[in-house]
Image (cartoon, rainbow, N blue to C red; front, side, top):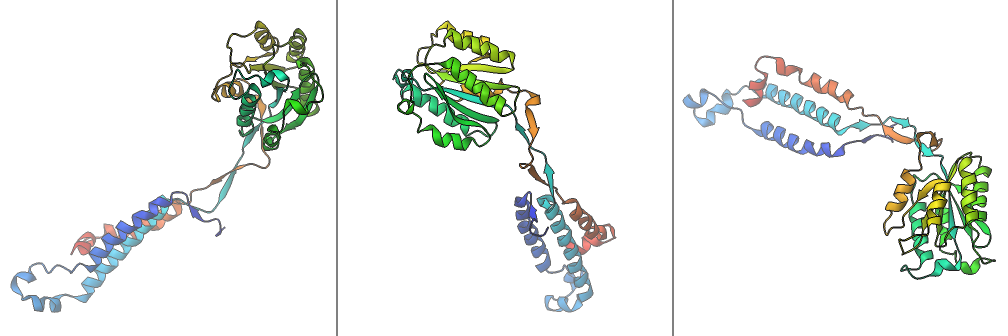
Length: 310
């Protein structure tokens, strides 16, 4: 418990400096002689001062100092007891489906389409509020890069090594990739999920049909066209509508991903974390208020303030 002792608002401790300076000035101040100074020589006044009166004055200043220090300690927020506050994590499974066909190497975007798509995924994998993420890449066949995981940093580390050159087949079969994404979600034990397709190729009718079937299983498909041309083929929108997802407009900022994440979360898709509780320290400053008030009790005695001033 002693090892955990700290202050929640430590800057309040700086007010000890002006308090000590104020008390120090009063402590060193010579007592006033009152009417005696008008009738006695200055070298005789010290002999007329009663040391008992000076002792009472110092005692009053000491009580005032202790009370002020206790108040400052209370305001600084001493804490040594930690209260666990439950943290909730998203249990929304999200599978990213990345097109690795040669169409992603076109340079209508600078850098190329594939690099821009990777930038988007890098931003997503760095987030801690995205839930469980998985990655599927596809050409003529789909390939799983990572199953659903909360450790998105692992996927992020693999992302830069993905190029069309390492794909064993050519082509563009988004319908098969969507089925592979569904399998990732169901294998992880989920009965719902989100799929985001990043592609530059116009979706096929077969992909639209698969997206519609997945939507009936509460697995919704969104698509982000990685294209400079904003005039899109209507099949992009048909895919999003059939999949009950979104047609996510590609932007130079992270606003597109923000909107997708925001619009694919419900209150039921959170669960309590078993290992990531947020530590909240209990402010124990109230215990220092009691002695602070106790040291101020003498102020209610007659002549106490006058004793400090004189």
